[in-house]
Length: 157
Image (tube, rainbow, N blue to C red; front, top):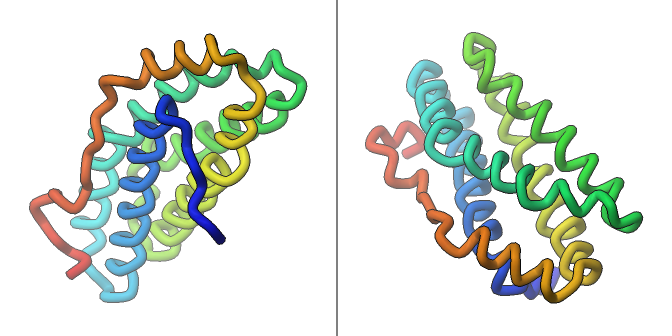
């Protein structure tokens, strides 16, 4: 699949998505290595508290309003539903105790990111007005690009 050309306004979200895919990769490696589950759970909560929670919020605040477009309604609804489902893992961290749950979580996040990058964002780019796209650029211009590889305990190595 050729690289997707992302508008400059949505690039901050795509960079955050890259970090999310890195999170999934580290979890998958931790599962394969049978890493300590408590370390993996701590890493998951760190990722949630320092990255994903905020990422979901800014998407919900800035993208959900585009559900008024017929072409975007279904995709925005899916985005919100998936956010809700993924959020439940972090709101109940006591479920993060088995490799199968870690695997389920990383697969959900991976699938969600790929949906947004391959389907939702291209549709947004081709649907909303230039003024609305510019508003998104302003909303996202100061977004951080965290890197979960900086986590101090490298359980995946």
